[in-house]
Image (cartoon, rainbow, N blue to C red; front, side, top):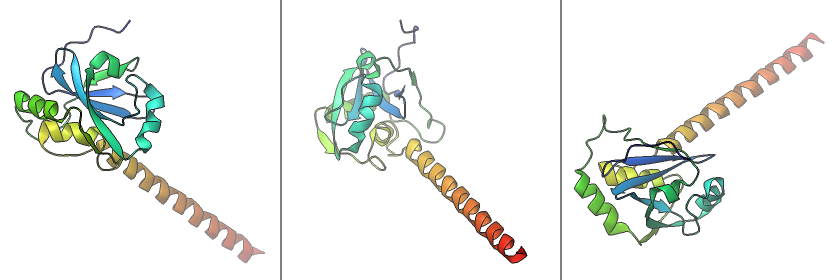
Length: 162
């Protein structure tokens, strides 16, 4: 049984901890969230929903939070409130409700569920998950290049000693 979690407030960002990524939704009241999901996504699908990220279309859905989260943990995370002023909750909910049922363009790197909810709350489409993944890939690439360079230098140094 899920621990008692306080009811989110209208317009809150809901972060859902899927096994390999974070899914995002926006709270619109009465237990419902609006979220961006590929048409094939099944609420609460967890890791299986990761495969739906390979699509180029998404559907704006209004579903019960507990169904969207399934067995995954979730929390309110209005993490950008210190940087951006949130729109009034009634405006956030109105904008979200107007989009329900629409099929929209979906791109993992520029138009995903996190971009979607940040656009609704702050008027700024952004995804820290994407930024963090790109940064990690860059750091890994630099690390691999450094290891390769060290290997070349050691190999050259070994040949010179022979």
